[in-house]
Length: 108
Ligand code: FES
Image 1 (cartoon, rainbow, N blue to C red):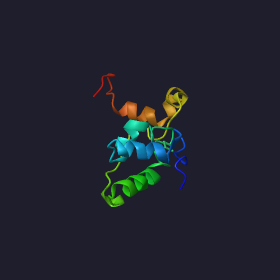
Image 2 (image 1 turned 90 degrees about the vertical axis):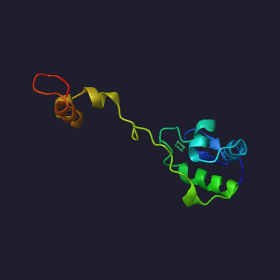
Image 3 (image 1 turned 90 degrees about the horizontal axis):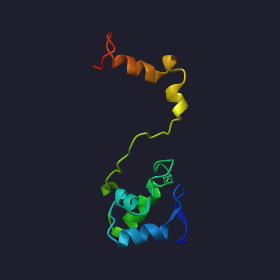
């Protein structure tokens, strides 16, 4: 496969950049993420983690099953601010907030 092939479409990271990160000591997807921003795009690595782990396995001799899971951060799915501020009385967030505040309005 051509080394210029994009693996992480969100951050436009290609195979060559990933292999360079591995040469500099990256051994996991999180290492690659820290060095290249691969996996930090809008899809939060849903599309690139598989191919990147295969490249890591091919370049390090490790088995795919031995590679650690990546650290996922919330929000896993981006939400718009207007979801949080509009129609708050009918939103599921309102029910969560209501449960965390007692009758006097104090936080539990
Ligand atoms: S394809 Fe890599 S973060 Fe979306």
